[in-house]
Image (tube, rainbow, N blue to C red; front, top):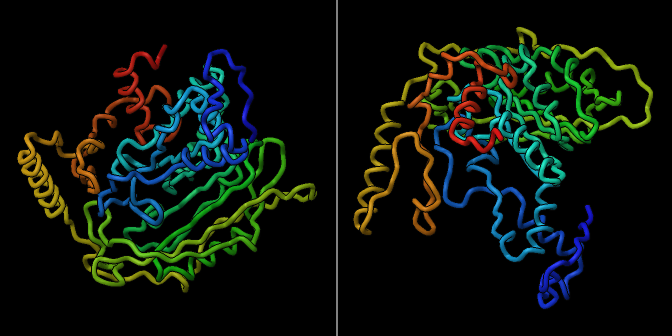
Length: 397
C-alpha cells in the first residue's frame, strides 16, 4: 500500500521541521504507522480466568491505540489510511453467555463500514477471525451473511471450531462435522487465504488427525469468480496448549489432565488458491470417526458447578477495590457484570473481567428478530443492535 498524496492547504501542514517527514523515508514511516496502529492486547483488562472464550492467544480484549493520530493533521490523514486498509475483526457466532461482552456485533460492523465509505474512506479488512458453534454453522447461513457484508472485502479468513463448539461435547461425543456448509459458502474475490482450525481435547488428537485428513483430500472453498481454494498440506500445523478446566460456571473434572487443567490439540488447515489449474471441484466429505476411534470416558459426574465460588471471588475482588478506592479519596464505579474502564485501574494493575455468565440478560429471547441474519435468536445480535441504535440515534441518520 502506498501513501496517498494530499495537497498542502494550510501553513505547517507539511511538517517539514519534523524528522518523521524530513529524514524518514515514506516506506519506513508507513511501517511505523502500521506497527503503531496494529491490534494488540488491552494493557489493563484481561478476560475472566474461567471464561469459555479465554484461550490460546486470546487472553485479553483486543484494542488499537490511536493516540498517534492526534499528533498532527498530516499524520492523522496518513494514519487513517493505514488504519482503514489494515482492519482486523473478530466475530463470535455463539450464544451470548459463550462470547465476550462487548464483542463485535455484525450489524454494527456493517453500519460502520458503510459510514466509512460515505466519508470517502476505503476500508479493507486484513484479517477476519470467526469463532463458530458447529450447530449454528451447519444449520444457518450466518457465515455467508458475514461474508456478504458490503465493503467487508476480507483478505484472510480464519474459522475456528473450538472444543466447546462441537456437538454434544459435554457428553464426550465422537467428533463430527457436516460438510454441507463448505459447499454452500461462497467467498468474496478479495479472499487470499482461508484457515480452518479444529480443536478438541488432547486425548482426542487421533480423532482430530483423522478429520483433518478427510478435509485435506476433499474440502475446497469457492470464490465468487469461480476459483477454488484447497488445503496446502505443507502448511498444515499442529499446536498443543493448556487451559483451565473451568469453562464458565462448570469445572470439567472428567477431562482434567492435571489439577484445574485441560490439555488441547489444535490443527490448522491452510486453504490457498489453486491458481490457473483446471480442476473439478470434489464433493466435500462429512468429517466423522469410527466407533473404534471414539472411546468416551464414563463419569458419573463429568462436571461440577462452581458459580458460588466465582460469585464470592468477584465480590471479594470488588470489595477490596472499593476499599482501596476509599483510601484514595473516592470509590470505584463498578457493578456485577460490568466492563471495567481504563480509568478504574491503577498504573501497572490488571483488572479481571467479571463472570458475566452469572448475570444473563434473557430479554433478547422474547423478541422476534427484525433482521434474521447472523444467527437470529440464538446469537441475539439483532436485539443488541436494536438497543444500540436506540441509545445512539445519530447512527441511524
